[in-house]
Length: 279
Image 1 (cartoon, one colour):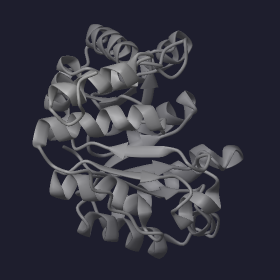
Image 2 (cartoon, helix red, strand yellow):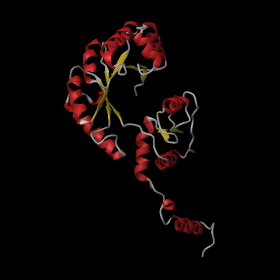
Image 3 (cartoon, helix red, strand yellow):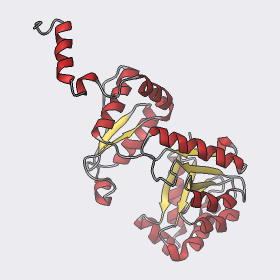
Image 4 (tube, helix red, strand yellow):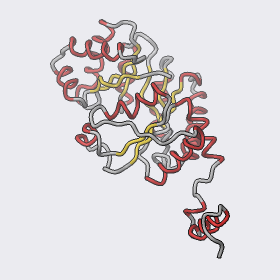
């Protein structure tokens, strides 16, 4: 697993001010802090500064590589031409963030990907939009890998993003039940109002434990209006993902008690267990 530090983004106020003022020391210190905290790559994004994005990316890449020449960079931009303009400036093989299965975006990114060897973040989105099911996400992933390999990208350089979404209560119940079936453990939610994102992303990585929370409880999420309140966010460690998927394939998603005749099913079950008297 690669950890990508994503703090160098001009959508963040202090980073934007540092880029505008060409405060190299602030940027270098922030990058050093991310590396010291375990980041393998540093994501660089100046997309919010549309009128000067390429110039700002050139400057960011230069000041980061000057003080930390060993750092690998992830170039992040919604503008393919901006990516292409700065690729020669990156010393180590970069990561490109990102490509999707949408035909127009894929075709626009293809010559950039072939320009030099690089890692690719591939979002499992196609022209239908964000996948509405696991099967659709898998279908998009298979197509993306196949299309990228045809461009000469090695499979080990492709990093698929299944596109994490907030889920409904019924979907949460199925996933948490699958976790219990697989591990025999109770559901546990770890969260705090401050640094809630660390509990969402870092805690599962460090502990190997699934975690879940409810949107609207974290200060940062609430301040930025990232999600509607009351949605569930589940974060699943990568190393249990395959076994959890197998559990989901094997188990009943809708329990008999939840079906229209669920009340009668429960009555018969209680009689069978000797908890309720027979009719």
